[in-house]
Image (cartoon, rainbow, N blue to C red; front, side, top):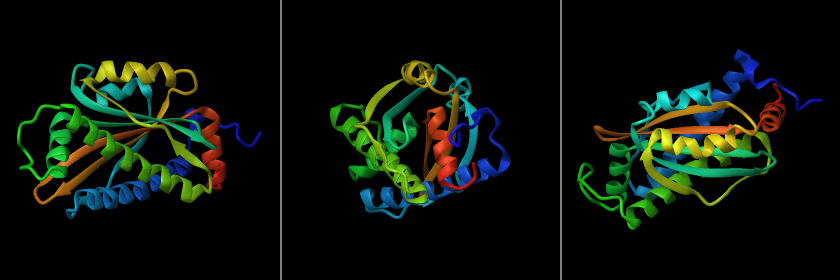
Length: 207
């Protein structure tokens, strides 16, 4: 079948296409973030690779690193999940930017701050998925985001149960957005199920 592709043997051409999706998505995310914050936001070239889910906690600084995780289900022609992870410094800076406060003000992540982060994660993830939809002409939708602030291992344990049902391979996209001399680093993990990887590559003409 055309959709049958071994995601553990994605070749360099497939990876180049996936990287291009990441680049375009990151550019759109930076534009969306700039509009939301009403500030000039620049973006460094994103780091993109395909990795095993078991490697994710290491990328985030270890299982005991405290992070903010925003998880959205992906459905439509593509099924899976997208996880957006911020370290606490980046999360604090984003909230302070949004609320017009000094970037490095110490804050508690109360309901208002968490709601703001949820909305930011929703808009950034939506930018990626919109880019993917436009490139592939596939119908790609996302669910309402869920947010947690906890150690990376604890946050990853929940999606790991879901991811493990369909795939152990993750498209990892590290973004660094800059505002003046300050930066915000956010990691995206896109996890289509195995059939959806094939659909993506077929839609892009490379499977």
